[in-house]
Length: 462
Image (cartoon, rainbow, N blue to C red):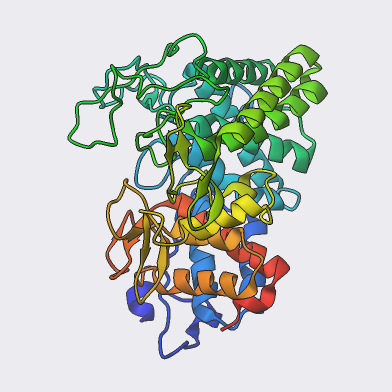
C-alpha cells in the first residue's frame, strides 16, 4: 500500500473495519498554499476522533481549496488572490467566497492566511467593477470567453449569468473578514465603488421601470441554460423583490423572484450598510443600502410564504408577483435549507421548520432517497443525483445530535472511495459521481466537521 500511494501518516496505519486509507491529498511540495493553522486543526480533529476514515476525509477535504485552487500574488502593492472552483479554470464570485469562508476562523493564528483572504476580497472588487452581472471570471482580464452567448460579454468574463447571490457572497466575505480582523485595508475607494455598483444592480433588477440593462440568451439544447422572452426571462410583477435570472446552480429560474437569494440580499445590504457607515463614513450610501434591505424584507414578508396543504405555511423557492409559486428546493446555496446558515433567520422559525420538513421529503421534486442515503439535488445534474452540499447544509443547520450524526455518516459512506466530496452522486450508486475536484463541497464538509468538533465533539466518534 505504501509503495502504491506514498507514505501515510502514522495514525492512518491503523485499520478501521478492515480498511486502510491511501494518501490522496496533494503532496506538500505541490500545494498552492500552506497554512500552519489549518494543519493544526487537522491534527486536533484526528486526535479527538476514533473514526479514522472521518479524520482522513477531514485531512483531505478541509484544506483542499488551499492545496489546489488558490493563486496568490501582490499586484500594485495589494494582495491579489484568484480562486478557481476546481476542475473549471474560472473564479466564481459565489464559490470563491464560500471556499475560503471557513478559514476566517483561523486568520488570528496565521497572518499569511489573513493576507490570502484579503487578496480574495481585492480580486472580487475588481470583478464586480468589471461586470456586476457576471458570475465567473478569468484571471487574465484580456481573455475572451468561449461561450457565444447573446449578452454583453467583456474580456476577462468567463460567464455572464446574473445571480443575486454572486454579489451577496462577496459582501458576506468582506463583512466576515472585517468583523474578524478589524482590518479596513481592502475597503478602499474601489471597494466603495463596488458597493455602489451592487446597490445600483440590485435596484435595476427590482424592475420597477422595465427589465433593466441585462439580457442573456444561449443557443443550447438545455432548458436551464438560456433565458426566454428575448433574454429577460418570464414576466414579473414588481413588488420590491430582486429578480435573479439564474439560481446558484447556474440554472435558469422559473419565476425570477428567487426567495433564498432575496433573503440573502437583505442580510447583505444590512451588513454593507454597517460597513459603509463605519469605514467609508458615507451615511447617504449606508442609508440607501439600509432602505433597500427594509424594502426587500417587507416584500419577503408579503410574498414569500404560501400555505401547503400538508405542511402548513412554508417559504416558496420562487415566485413572480402574480401569485404563482414554485415549491421546491435546490441543493445549491443559497437554498431554503441554508437560510439559518446565511442569514439571521433562526432555525426555530416555525415557517422555516415547516419548509425544512417539506423540502427534505418526496414533496420536493429534487429530493432523492434510497436504502443507502438521501438528499437534495436539482436540475443541474439530473434525476437521482444527490449533492453532498445538501447533506452538509442539513448538518450545519441542525442542532439535533442524531440528525447531525446521520449527515456525517452519510457523507462518510458516499465519497466513492476517493477521500473527497463531489458535486453530486447517484443516490443508488454513490461511486457514480460528477466532478471529482469540486473544492466548495470539500471545504464546506470541513466546515461541518470543524463546527461539530467545537460544539458536539462526541458526534465525530464511531
